[in-house]
Each structure stands twice: as C-alpha cells, then as structure tokens.
Image 1 (cartoon, rainbow, N blue to C red):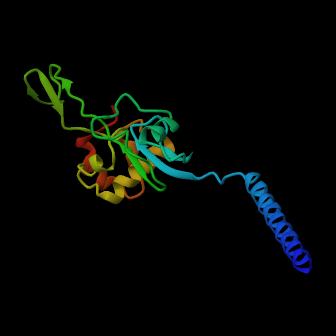
Image 2 (spheres, rainbow, N blue to C red):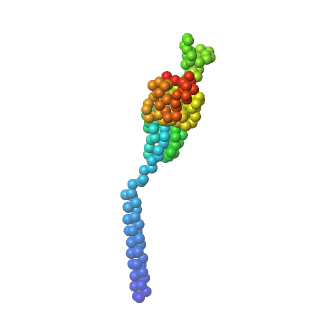
Image 3 (tube, helix red, strand yellow):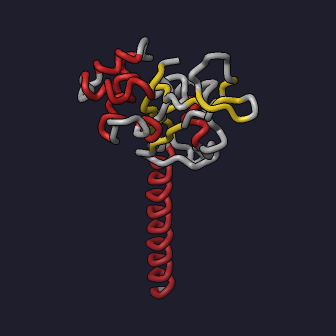
Length: 188
C-alpha cells in the first residue's frame, strides 16, 4: 500500500509538471503570434531618362525589380533606351539605376549643319545637355566626370537648360570652358 501511495504521488507530480510546462509554452506562442513582422525597406536612386529622377524607398517583398523603381519615379521618357538596361534586374538597397538616352538620327535638311549624311540620314555631332547622361557629357570638350556630374545635378535641381549659354551657371564652367564646348552642345 505504501508503494501505491508513492507511485500515485509521483504520477500526480509528473502530471502537474507536464500541465504547467504545456501551459507556459502555450502562452509563449500566443505572445509571438501578436507581434507584427518588421517591414524591410530599400532605397534606390533612379536617374537618366525617367519622368522624375529621384531616390525612392520601396517596401522590400523580396521580388522587387528595376521596373518597380522606374515606375515609382513616374516611368520612362520617350528618349529612354530600354535596349541597354535590364528592367528585370533584382533590386538591392543603395542601388543606382541609370536609364540612358537612345541614339536619335536626324534627317538632313538643306543647309543644315546637323552632320554628315549617310543614305539620307544625318548623324548629329551635337550633344544635348538636357538629355545626355554623365558618360555622354564627358564627350564634350573640357568636361570630365566631375563637371558632367555637376551638369546632371544642375539639370535635376533647376530643370532643362533653356539655352546653351545657361550651362555657364554650372559651377566650374566659365567663359573659357564654354568657348571650348559651345560648338558641340545643344539644348534641342
């Protein structure tokens, strides 16, 4: 009889301990269910031939692509060259997406200095300072990477250049530099 009492007491302690542990684990799960997941965001700089170049912050769902960032800044302009950019490229925080300008061939007009004719189509040697990206701007005589960056920055902050002379408002471009570049730039 003494053994039965001891076995019953031990069984009761085991049952109570199991119930207590189960009850504590249930409370932990309930608390964890009420916690909202932290939303992850990434920031991407989109520039070039987009409606509104800017840094955009997007909620990262793990499936973001370059096209999502481009759409967030208003989409592409008519001059965007989509053949040289991968709009399906996955995004990551701190990324820079630059949409370049597509090459445009102009039809040669009589008495036009547009360029040399190739089968009725003229290729312009002028660089449009309103649409050229930093790499293209470096083809202008007297313009290196720093000045090209300042031209893009000025254009982004102040809008399109109204005349080629307005480029002198860009820090680092004075009268001498303008004289070197004026025959190779346009705003049209």
